[in-house]
Each structure stands twice: as structure tokens, then as C-alpha cells.
Amino acid sequence: MINQIESIDPVKELRRTPRLRIPVPFACSFSRLGLSRWRFGDRGGHGVVFDLSVKGARVMSPLLVKEGDELAISIRLPNHPTTMSLDATVRWQQEHMFGLEFGTIPQGSETRLRKYLARI
Image (cartoon, rainbow, N blue to C red):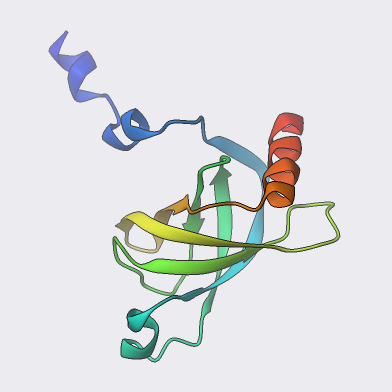
């Protein structure tokens, strides 16, 4: 019983929607929002999306971010012609990997995201 409790992923327990492993990771770009953009002299960065849900994503990037950073992220889903621009907050960070929680998603973007996730 103790081993089962210790093996529970605390981040997974906080998720409200399932996060799906993407068959082929895809690129994204992002920049910090607000005052931290100016404090870090941020010109933005690029990353790779590994996991995705309608509420967030797991991203790997050489740009170091910290928990609480607010980002503007652009992602282009595989086989989709247009880019989605979303606001997100960094919820956890470990070396060059971090988890994002999306802010309010425009209806059209949410529909595309749900359709994409239903196919994988």
C-alpha cells in the first residue's frame, strides 16, 4: 500500500483532463509575457511539444523558464495549415522540460485542438 502511494505522480493528480503523448512531437515557439519579458531581455524561444491536452502541454526547450512565467505560445498542429496562438502559464519546470497550463482558448482553436486529440 505504501509503495502505491509513493508512486503516484503529484502533477498527474492535479490534471483535470488527460494529457496525451503525441506520436510525433512537433515544434512550437513562445515568448514571455509581462514584466519578465523585459527583465530577461526575452526575444522568445523555440521548443518541442511532447504531450498535449486541451488544458496544457509538456514542452522541451533550451530557453530556461521558471514556474509561474507567463508565455505566449504558437503551435501548429501536424497537418493543420494555420498556427494557434495561446497564452499559457508555466506550472512546473525541470531542467529543459516544463509543463504549461493554457489560459482561455479561443473557440476555434479549442475545436481544432479537440479534433486533433481525438485522432491520436
